[in-house]
Length: 147
Image (cartoon, rainbow, N blue to C red):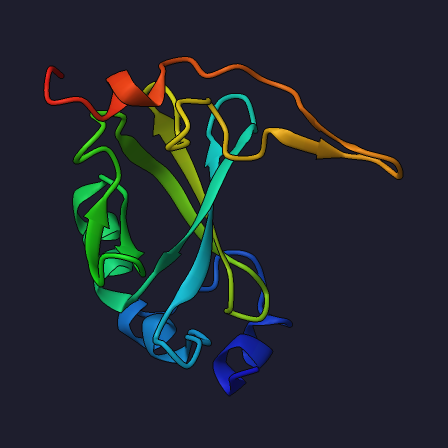
């Protein structure tokens, strides 16, 4: 844990630090990424987890439209650029260690590439896994050129 995040442990409410200082202290992984959990701002529903690098986090904070780092594409990925299902930032928070982001967002339509509202649709118990939701939009329509 960085000295900055260690000092924030005992900081009182209202303590402020410059954004660049915080970004410098984030515990980026070896690929320069941090996990970001997207949560619907008004319902608390956990929608998805993706990765952000410094540039995608800065763009998200600057524009209010959520931008991630696509590991498969090797480039910035503005949520909804191919599906039309955008995320708009309401609030961003770092955890106490500075190694995970929580994004409070306003999600239009499904967040998952499967067309479901949430990526977390496989429920597990001691004996089985159960798919617990249907796609809102079939993936073939979600990513069609007809949109």
